[in-house]
Length: 356
Ligand SMILES: Cc1ncc(COP(=O)(O)O)c(C=O)c1O
Image 1: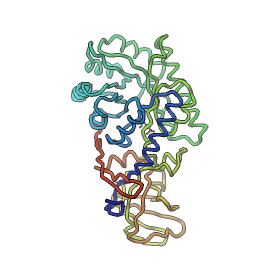
Image 2 (image 1 turned 30 degrees about the horizontal axis):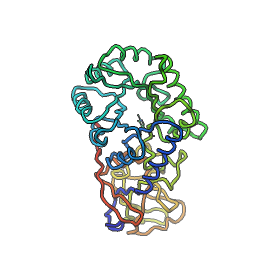
Image 3 (image 1 turned 135 degrees about the horizontal axis):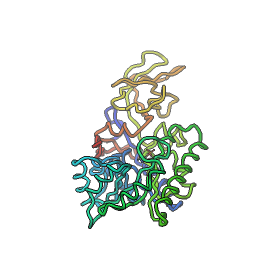
Image 4 (image 1 turned 120 degrees about the vertical axis):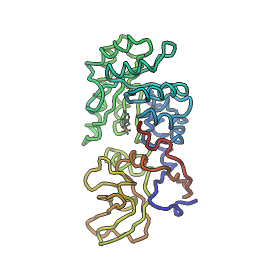
């Protein structure tokens, strides 16, 4: 099968570009002496989990237990960077531990108490304390870390593995200098919080996330592990924060279905294919190879608008680089893996919809 044989809209992953992104990240982390634990939430596929492991990742990160069940290769180390609450999830986490080396996140006495029910005295569950370094989502302030560490220390079924943070606020940065400051501050906060727990603080993991901050984490000595996710495919948002269009491996193949005016064309990919998560005004997706954007979308229509003549014709096929690739992948059952000779083969999105 070739790309021209695909019906549209269709998620297409350029395998060579994705593997190049995986290799470049692995090399950068290895050169800096920092462990790489990619977040699988972007590709949600065993194929790319395995490729990341083969390239030298120490393990994977997953957002949810169900995601880890589907996309962590058997035997691998997986960090569920989330608070695992409720009996059903605890049971699944315990079952996952029979197949994988599992670490989880905690940021409250409640989450610690629940995690303690999953670990055993013979096989304590490694946990990491989530620290809020400025995203103001989950995570405790650095000042609260020592008391959580004491609580973990009192649980014989838990082992404190380290600290982690996610610098989501880097997505609101407006310059490389600001991204550098965010990364440096985060690493410094984790080092300081680790020192406050134990004199043996260097033995603790200090794990940071977020693709746009990677170059700066690498320069700021102190992090032991990086958890980028989006880097595997990149997207228009990443390009706005320092990546290159040439790195964008995920596109939605679409067909122009209507050209109502010279300056407006419509494709058959709307929000049910392209998602529209956190999209700034006028930037749902970039039309690859054209100076055009899908500026807005309804469920099944993507609307390309420009100042001059779009130059597109009905029936023409275009490839769209989404603003935020992660929810786009999660909308697809499978993707077409594109080879350099334009051949394609289907691969499942193994962790599609795994949000539990
Ligand atoms: C906890 C955590 N770690 C790492 C990441 C990866 O970040 P990015 O997609 O910017 O690479 C995310 C993304 O949402 C996250 O929530």
